[in-house]
Length: 349
Image (cartoon, rainbow, N blue to C red; front, top):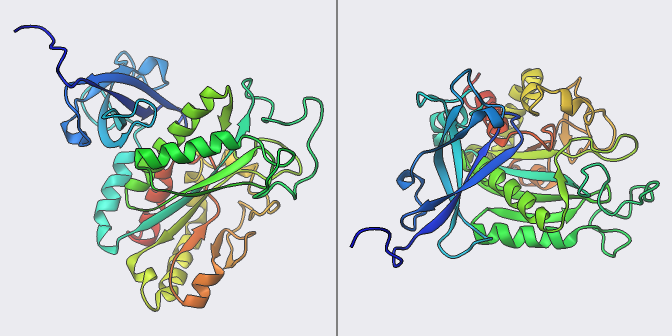
């Protein structure tokens, strides 16, 4: 018979991409003819780039090519979330597509098996995006101290969102590793990883989309601003943990120190790539106060949370493991961050 058969296994896929700001996410739904978790089998689609700050002159149509699939925790069943990269009207890499460079460089250094784990901090705001969620309407909460990993309605705001996000990420197949309330009230953190190579960026971006989508249900805005509240309040980062196979093996601490030395020589380049504004966003956060190092100088230390790079105490004791780059801002692009890191420590760029 002709026409659409009601027995066909039609499934919606939600295509997600990064917009022209380098930090915003967009998405739209496409009906798929059969269930799949293979991005190679999914059709390339398109969108209007003039509405996402991605238009190239008169050619406003931008292609979105599927690159990673996740189970959809909202529609469930065989429905999927589809992370996409952007291509121009000729099918070439779009200027806002930072994933392709990351993918290519990860392929060049895949023999060292780079692992990443990212600690994503964020702040909840009310529906206006101006008032931190749960803060007094005329004033401020008490000073920082009792909120970090706290419990109780006088210390913690938004736990329902956090718990829903955690479960949704696990359902989707995101490699979420943990979560906790942060130092500033209404500020939280979750961790994703360890992820190898390009999967770090794919998993973190989709986890961000899931978080904002869940917050919609509570009329809450998720902010990744690295210094959302001026004054004596902690900023928000995207601390990035890094290791190669050699660092994880016996004697790996020496390899960690070698990588840190290389990163110190490229401090300015890393600061530039660690937020979507070429380092300007992060200058408000990296002041040398509130558990940060100054953006103006590079330093490192064991268990030192005021350093650019921290070597965990256990790693120093074991003589192997990983190290933590504390400089990336909460609104950093994980594709750009991980790309910059492997270019420095693996490819000598």
